[in-house]
Image (cartoon, rainbow, N blue to C red; front, side, top):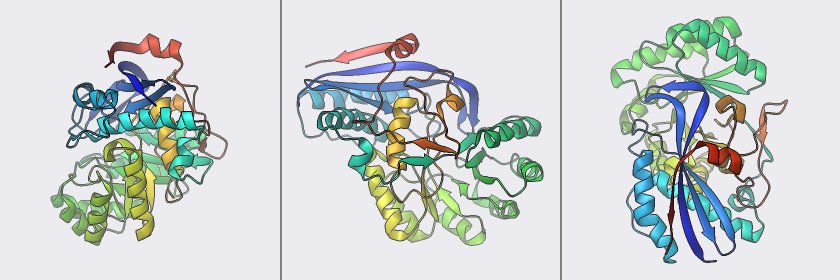
Length: 360
């Protein structure tokens, strides 16, 4: 198979509802899509990087630059690889596009290639900061009524006890609730975080800054709520170190954050070997990124609902045919060749802001 062209396409896809986290507010998803054109067809990948470097050091402009300058020329030259340190999300987008076109040529799905065992994946709904408890309860009620298996709430110092108490008062213990702090607490908050144990949470995700593994280990010994790491885990080696230190007992695996789908499987394998629950996180993906992430989430070690909600929770109109929640709160894993979906070109063209085509 010969790579003839690499296309970098920027897309501005409006969210159905603005999503606010400790890292900032997203109203329009600034997406970078990678199309790899070969003599046997095209493959698509999606970069998980956000518009600003608030979640990780990567951001869309940087990912675009490193793909255009390094990864694309290597692909076009037929090189086995290129030495680039970091830039995991850029790397994952390119790997995704190459896997898509290669597997399409073989007639195999990404799910089959990775070793997925599930045809449908249980998913949950994530709710960002709402600004008021009544608004949070309204959004929570909508998610529960829609059939989501669990609900994830964003928390930070000053926005934790009150909303969680209101949620438990309204919905009781019948709804699975987990929280995500995006590293907004410090070691000084250990006793405060311990006070959240009374809410019966599934887990608390990334309570402390990403590099503070020792702080997470100390916190995990102090609180009853399972500690889950997200931003701290950028590779299988990171996961192994974190588990050895006792810094977490659950791992959130995002293919973009760890550098691709093969590495996501390796992180998954570490969790399986250690008997540690894992789940697949989300990055406000379009249908292109969601299709690939569902293939990862269908691996046998993913035992908690994925952060990959139906298309209509994110976008009024998705870039692919929409993913729809079934009556049991699941999404179907694509079974077609490659990632199993293709862009709706009319929708894609309408939201495209720029296109760069790189050729030999």
